[in-house]
Length: 228
Image 1: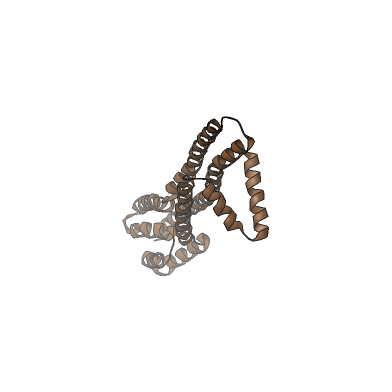
Image 2 (image 1 turned 90 degrees about the horizontal axis):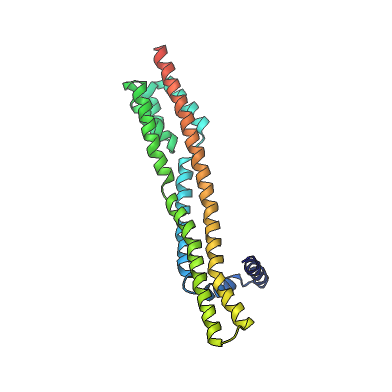
């Protein structure tokens, strides 16, 4: 398997020098057989979900420290209504959570805290939406590749049986074609796994900022209530 991967990489580099990488990849794709298509579909769909998650998480991210300062200033100047207006005009998961908590602030700190916790859970669901599909394609792509390899190995042994002898050419060609699906499946999984890990790390950061800033908001509301 390692030899096959090294040979594939060497082939890509050699073809790249001639300016025909796409032709080389297309040739290997066709040689891989029918299982290459579902692997390609898994890659395309996985990348589509990755692009959507990247766009959504980018919109949900924000400068948390700066926003907290703005909320505190709004609370000092115009009270809760002014802070609510600021949250409505601010994009991001933390702004949405703050908005839910501030809407219940007049009912008491307990109500505001419960609203923040409830809406925080909802926002987490929005942040993680689509990750299950990326994870699914990460799992399916190598399995499709292994299945294609098994089928290719069966065909290779059938070819040996028909030839009535173990020819190096027959064996090498059959095994090489069989391993192509595994190679492409693993490459697909590795590409999507990188995106998945980046998204998980980004979500963890947003959730951490959300929890920390929510505590600070509750503390600020408590100070306001105590001073009044």
